[in-house]
Length: 115
Length: 188
Image 1 (spheres, rainbow over the protein chains, first blue to last red):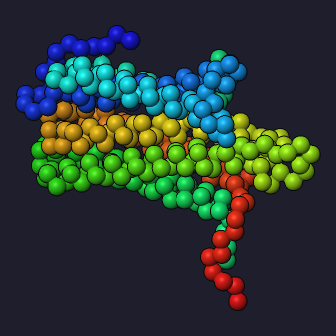
Image 2: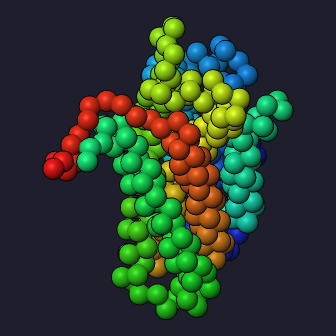
């Protein structure tokens, strides 16, 4: 994903918007990962078996665990890169909210069935 | 008056953690909306900033407790496969729903959506809580960040509402029941 990192004066003093942007964008990525892994496991029995981390819960255990790890990794990386800078927050907000909206839609089974 | 352990866990998960999250969600949206203008942010006291941070942290804790109890305690009981030849499916909610065309969709749409959409909630609300705590009063300098937070909390409330609605309907059509019986009040 190309990440907008241009310097934008969102405020005049205090904390830059980078850490907030990192939290927002990574939450969008983590949410989308939940939906993406749910579809992947639904479409492929190989992937489904890979995601069975805890048998009584089935593939849901792996789908969510991997999505959470991906979310936290993305957050750590973005936070490390943007800790001391301002980034284009409107663009990041749109990307994060689109990812979140897609997650809500893609987890809806009739839409999942379209793939 | 008695209750089975599985019913008790379902109550703790849905009526305890989940319902509390839904109640708290509307309060968080009002708080964030009232602070949406820079002027309101400037006027807000440090105590109220701290309170909002704690409030969202409690919401995040409730969201994590809801999904973890749902996924790792209740869901295994819900999806347990009945032994071959089982006629009474009352102890196997998933199989019970799938056995009847009139209730099949509660599983194939309701549970399938609920089990995934609920996991968006802790991710989103944890991010919102961290941003509010980290920025505190400095949030007044970031109107775009405040808008994102409001959108995130609203989306989390919507996702939690979907999960809560289907949770209630699933439990109405095929309750997760069984286990040890706990006597709450001794009969006369």
